[in-house]
Length: 155
Image (tube, rainbow, N blue to C red):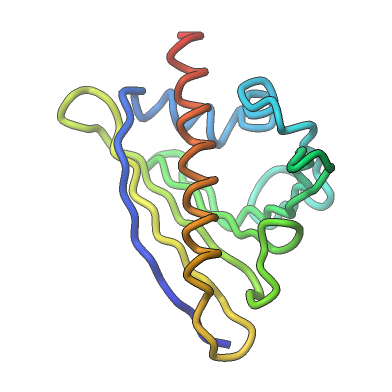
């Protein structure tokens, strides 16, 4: 298995603590409210801490799909969160898992800087498909913006 690492960064007008609370602590409640296509979040294994696996169900192209999301680490003091996509529609056939490490910090404008490190754990040594990576990033960016807009509208 080969591991391919990608770095990304974005900013948000939402304060880091508020964004962290919405994306980590209250995500199971906020994401289905903010994103119409998300239908349910259920814990399949664990108690909500590291090692917990969640099944997130959503509608895409008129059919219900799901993704399995495993919590790898929670660092509330430093606004850090790590999770892996370990199964379901968001995991390409060529990947064992995709791990996302995120860290929020204060931006100069009073909002947030979100730093991401994405580790693509491939089956074998083949690099990830560029089109799949672009599509995954576009979906992730769109999801983030919808949640951000929800937080701004409900502040």
